[in-house]
Length: 293
Image 1 (cartoon, rainbow, N blue to C red):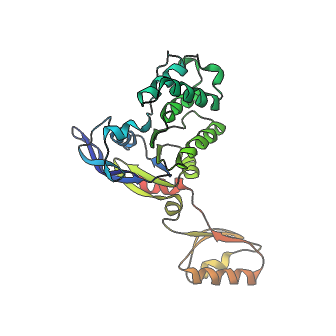
Image 2: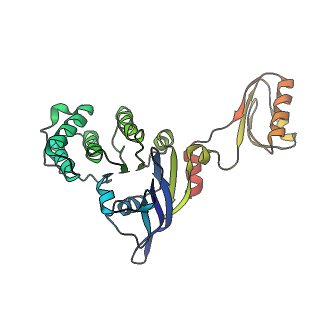
Image 3: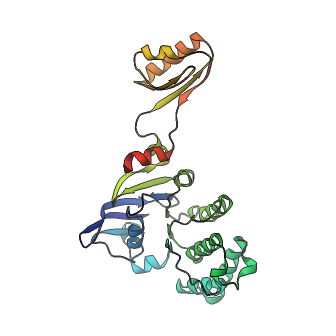
């Protein structure tokens, strides 16, 4: 497990991170979200040792992370860290060697990854000659080439179309199946909601929420939607029922308890057809807006 524990980072009078704590469990995708300037990139740089915390620590498997541990992490910075005027195969192989791979193994791994990304015919091309999406593929390849034991990815899906996102997710899933913890940041909340096992939300350098997708979506008032065959105006007079929205045979309501919900369902069925009756699953974006305002 990768763990950030009570990390604070100050830049002069600015507190960029304030007592930030969260864990990235083995074999799980953890989404790291927050607005611009929330502190996501600063946190990732501290995890990777690019920045030192003012206070607090980063742990790997329960112990303070070491330079040797970090050498086995895969890291993808938000601003691409590759050389735009260099051919993509040699520089991927070079990065593999920096992680301790033999030259032959590094070249073989680079060729395999580029082949998976449909770039097998472009190994001699300079990075700057590729589209932005393909540059992003090469950047992800550089993070995973040495079979890392943890992955820290800053906006890895930027510039990728939906098919490429699925392609990248399939690759990263191969690592989580081996027990590798994956932390990635993204502004695409729908994507985070779909891909992640758990989510950490940062606001102005403070963790304001953390938990599984289901836990966060179910936080706050639980509304039910009823679609019936007749007008539902009678709901306004029902005990234990708060009408959130009502339009003829369609209603969104909040129940005081399950007894009230069952009573309303029985009454609605007595009055006619009930086409649907059930809880409204809130999108993660709704909860995100609530906790980051």
